[in-house]
Length: 159
Length: 141
Image (cartoon, rainbow over all chains, first blue to last red):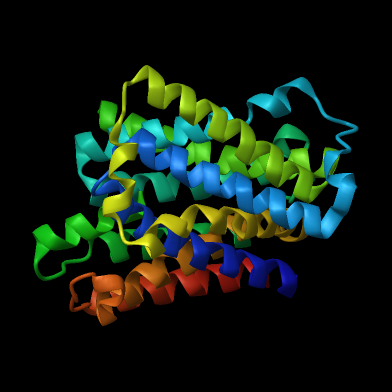
């Protein structure tokens, strides 16, 4: 359990850094040029680390299903929807809604064991946990801060 | 209303991506899954960049080199994410990822890291982070 939480925290911290750095790239390059750079480097790093960890086994793709080749398209959906949401609602509201939706769908998928996931039974405790987190997100995002305009600029990074 | 729908779909896709990666990881191995999804995402992004005639890659050189490297973090991010989902489920993984992510944004704003202009955080932001941590503790016990 602890390992899973520590790994998630590492992933989250790197996502946070990535958001900041990518937004700096996005100040000069467009959304697609930025995405191409990010995924290109992501592939290079994954391929290198994968080779170090797995050796030639990295090329053994037994059990590969056709839809695996298209799963990268989900990422395209993420970029499109978040960009459109931010454009229409502004970053604060769009990101608050997206973060809340992430957790609600996660709870739903865990509870019904969607897409072949192992079922994590839905309990009252889980509902409370998720509601408290969502309350925290909303307070963090929507709670008054000084210099509102510049804050909104910053929050774009979380997209 | 359309904006709300886009934001909800964006959140759905982020969660879906985690679940899909975890399933692919179970089928072909974690590093194989990380490499394949980055490769296919990259190819799709190149097609879209050409389709939308985005030629701004010429401006990469205007960006400070450090900031150009962030894409490489994905190797560790996706590997950790897949492993975590297998160990503790989607809900707890996503909750912990969100907290660490918002905490980085929070400290960057407070201390003005990476030449981001400093922000004063008020009580709601501190209480908000506290509630998120409390929520994860409730989920984990």
